[in-house]
Length: 227
Image (cartoon, rainbow, N blue to C red; front, side):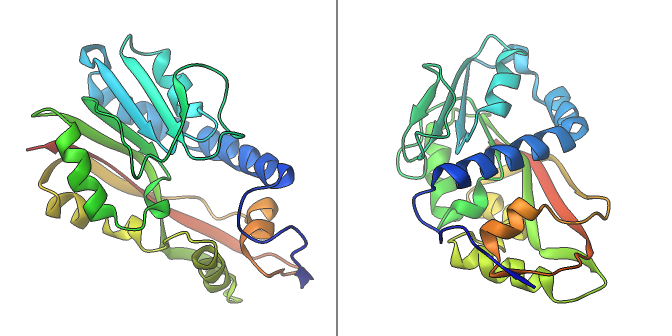
């Protein structure tokens, strides 16, 4: 096994941000078909304001702006990773979410400390019938691994050390239901087995096996309406 060499979790260094950009781009490209399906369910032409918490490098936001005339705002806590443009805002979306009639997120819930409390706050920012679309969230409790060498558990442990909640993806339905949202659509998919991204492993594991197993990832998505 090869030891991790990059700095520990905290304020990301330039190397870590570059790794994040590559990972975000890969995820975005891999989920293009799912994203198009979700777009078809949202009636984007009727939307007036969109807010994306944890927008990262802005890939989803830029895509949405090509599909609707709605006012879009994306917020991320890391100013160094945000793209240029007045629609991308530096801020803490967990503490200060903006009002909108459509909320969208991608791989955001795992960064929340208390998703249920946050969704109750979001519900107040949405009009009656407003929507929240989760384009993708990992369910880290269901990582496929072949052969099983314990790497999935090592990944979960590393993510938890880096303050990423590994069980929130499996509880999305419960969080939204308890916050008085009604589910309009949703589902899950399992990625095809492939070797894990080394940049991802370098960021979140203490050591990397010399021979990587094939791994698959459970991704959940959904659209919820404010009751």
